[in-house]
Structures are given as structure tokens and as C-alpha cells.
Amino acid sequence: MAAYFWLLLENRMSVIIIGGTGAGKTTLLNALASLIKPSMKICTVEEIAELNLPHENWVQFVSRESYGVGGTASGAIPLFTLVKTTLRYRPDYIIVGEVRGEEAFVLFQALATGHGGMCTLHAEDVDYAIKRLTSPPMNVAEVYIPLMNVVVEVERVHLPKPVHGLHFGRRAREVSEIISHKEFVRIFEWDPLTDIYNSRLEDSILLRKIALKTGRNVRELLDEIERREIVLKWMAKRNIYNISDVAKVVSQYYMSPETIYGIAARELAIPIKLRVKAVDNLSSEASSNEDKEPNSEETEES
Image (cartoon, rainbow, N blue to C red; front, side, top):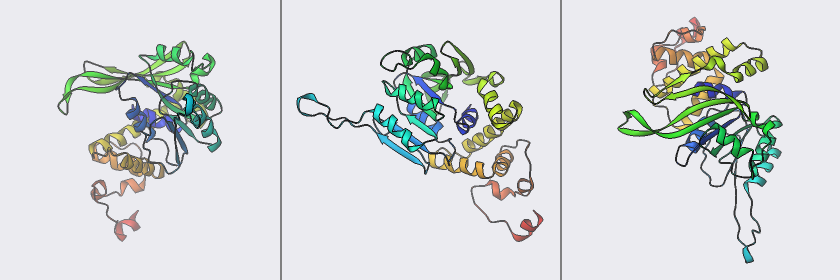
């Protein structure tokens, strides 16, 4: 599932994360944002600074409250104003920590002009999220709802088996692609009995959209998702969880996808589908944590 989001974010698709208080919305938002292409420019807007991104082109905005004499809010800077301000920075992605008011309308206007967007929203499910977005004070027009391409529903759940000694955890219960304000396609669904995800990537509307935009076919995109899934599993095996370390691997993958994929597939003992000389000549030491320079003989042979 993470590999699916990685590909979507590379192509400026927009994501909204919904759930209750303490469900892990902001945590997931930060984790997904770390997969955004390192060269992209990101503007974040929050009431309280919680997001921490590794990108060099990251501009952070935090709202400010002000209480003047007689209850006047002189000098206050609300989220609404900050979201409008981000448009002047020409960002690739606008990330709003949580939408609750008229800033949602401005965010969707930005999506309509070609910007990517991410945000969180308190809502129980997709239907309720759409009702909140289209009602006051957000007032997002129904025709704009599909601009938020993917809805992720997160929840604190009871796990069928303890994980690290814990019986409760946070899971993305459902991932749906929005077709209209009345129609959506469920792509991933969490199984509470097995703690695994059932995937229906073959039904993805967004993959077809990306295929048309990039000139690739859906089969190629599914293969790319599979390769990135292997890289992510390799990162998990190596205990690469720190956001800065994740960003480094993502950056290296964009610079040399064949090499990174080759290392990951080798360590996980998975048949390598995408081979080049650089991968074939990787020694077993290159797969370890230690970085070693190749000797001259190996360089000449490659």
C-alpha cells in the first residue's frame, strides 16, 4: 500500500486522511509526505507545528491567534490566510495539517489549478467526510470533491495478534479513490481477522490516469509498484524508520532505481526483474550496512 502512495505522490495526486481523535492522522500524513519526490517544493500549513519533513524545498507556515482589547483579534493570522499565501510560493504540494473551516475551500481551489494537496479531516467514513466538506463552513462545491483523489480512513483498532506486545494499534482501515461526490472505488481494505490488506489495484482509476499522463501502460505501473514495495520491505528489514533515513533511500531510488532495487531484492532473496550491469556487479558487501568502494578490477569489468 505504501508503494501505491509513493507512486501517486510522485504524480501529484492528492490525499485526504480521515479518522477520529488519536487515530494517527497526522502521523500518517507525515509518513506519506516523506515519500514525496525530494525535488518537489512543499508548503505546510498548521495551527500547531507538528509536521517534520526532510525536503530542502519545504516552507512551513503556522497560524497565529491574537486577542486584543475588547476581544478584537487584531494581528491574527488564520489558516485561511496562510493557505492563500502558499499559492504565491508556487508549491508542488500544499499540505494542511487539519481542515476545519474555510481554508478547505481555498485548498480545493488550489487543487483545481494543478497543485498537489494533502490534509487531514475529522470524519468517521468517506460519506461523512464528503458531507462535512460540502457543508458550512467549508462549502466545497460537489464538483470539486474528486480533486482530492484518495481518501484514507484510519482508526485505532484491536489487533488479532499482539504486535511488539501491544494488543491495540492504528491501521488504515480503507483506502478509496474518489470518482464523484457520490461514488468511490475501494482499493485497499484491512482485514481485522488476519491484520493484512486486501488489494484491488486492478480497479484503480488513478493508475489509468497516470498511465495516460506519462505514456506508460497500467501493467508497467503495477510492476513499478511491486518494485517499490520490495524496496520498502527491505527498508523495514534494515530498520530504516527514521524520516531522514527514509528520505535518503527515496532520493537514492530516484537517482538509480535499478541499483537500489537490485540491492533490496538480493537481500530479500527475491528474483530480480530489472537488471543492469551495475546490479549484476554488486558484491555482497554492497548489501551490508558498511559502505565500501569497489576495487579497480570490478570497475573495469563493469
